[in-house]
Amino acid sequence: MQELEKVQLPGLILEADYQLSIEHAADLGQAETVIFVDAAVSGPEPFELKRLEASGSIEFTSHALGPEAVLAICADIYGYTPQALLVAVRGYSFEFAEGLTDKARQNKARALETIKLLIDQWRGKEMAAETGKTIIIIDDDPDIRKATRIVLESAGFVVGEASTGEEGLKVAQKIKPDAILLDLMMETVDAGSKVSTQLKEGGFSAPIFLLSSVGDAVRYNIDAQELGLAGIFQKPIDHNTLLSTLKAELGL
Image 1 (cartoon, rainbow, N blue to C red):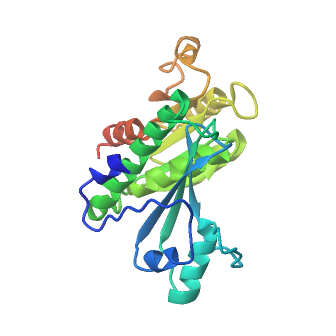
Image 2: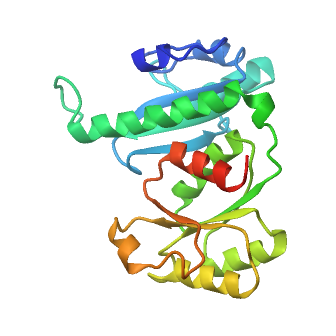
């Protein structure tokens, strides 16, 4: 909370509560965008970023409400729901203790970087509303696709997705994107490099960036220049680096 209080954005309201309640629906009814931040017992590291929708049914007790239920109450009362995101920061130890584990502290720092990035993008929304550029994310991990889509769309990119190399080839050939983010390991350990080679052989000239979760060794085992790659991003993706690199590559 203290870190976000330093973000000087008119209209930014911060609230820390132990749990969500019916009363929070009134706050949502006045908001354009809301970010729910919570600790997660399991899930992606360092955090999960996803969009939330109002629950189809409003179910709650007097002690606890989920964010989807609060959105549903907001919709029921105001006929409106704001854009809603969840940042679920991966935690590891939930026993009573002082402070965070080192790993949880690192995850929190990465989550804060992305939250600040999203706020910065919304601050310049009028400028970033449309870049006129389309990016395709080809990755078999739906969490990676969801989080990356949110970040790219916040910066004004049009985003397409594919979950396999074969599907990615078809989508790329159909819409001819301005850049591609391509996972290295999908159906096979070298699926990404094969897709990149096929795209280049088919005349695709836009930049292709490889996404890798196998560490720095990939830089020594893959010749990015030979494959026609514009670069390699290590997972978990640093969203600040991702946006700055894409904007520089695309002349934005």
